[in-house]
Image 1 (cartoon, rainbow, N blue to C red):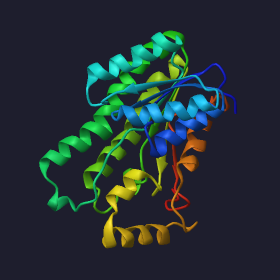
Image 2 (spheres, one colour):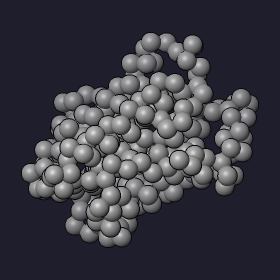
Image 3 (cartoon, rainbow, N blue to C red):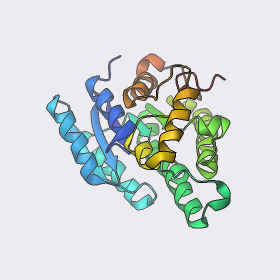
Length: 252
């Protein structure tokens, strides 16, 4: 795969899966805009990219704020002159039974995991439609395909992302824009570590590993490889598809 001369914008690129995706796309020749609400994390990702000779830009962006999202897109265009690839990766969750959720949690999880990608996609489509070229990869979750105990609203959002992906893929095909979705299974990231602290968390991790046929958690680079393929011209005739990268946790 070759992404030379392409410009990729990845949200949630300050760590975890997002950082893994940014490093992978950079290794394939893309110039990378790394966006994250935690700008320090985005800057750390950029430093890693620059060490390999990759041109990169750090963007402190709250994807739940449309004004910031529009500024993120414009800054990327100002710096690199184009936008070829958007990876909607930023996300957030807590593990808690639905009956114990506070409504404020619902609002936050919907804003980050559903509205945010919608805002980013809408802002990115204008320059992509103008050039009649673009690759959008949405990071959903297997929770959005089969549900996940303790993640009801998160699962609802991720299921929404899958449906959103298919619809935008249909609408944008006439403009030669590919829109696909990657669904990670349990992945070894700082967020997962934060969600599973303590003895109860250790048992949750053990149960996750036991449920995966490969008997391990995914690594960010596992997800990044699938994203890189869908972002490349080798996937030029693939659109509206949902790919699970979960070690066989789901097979459908």
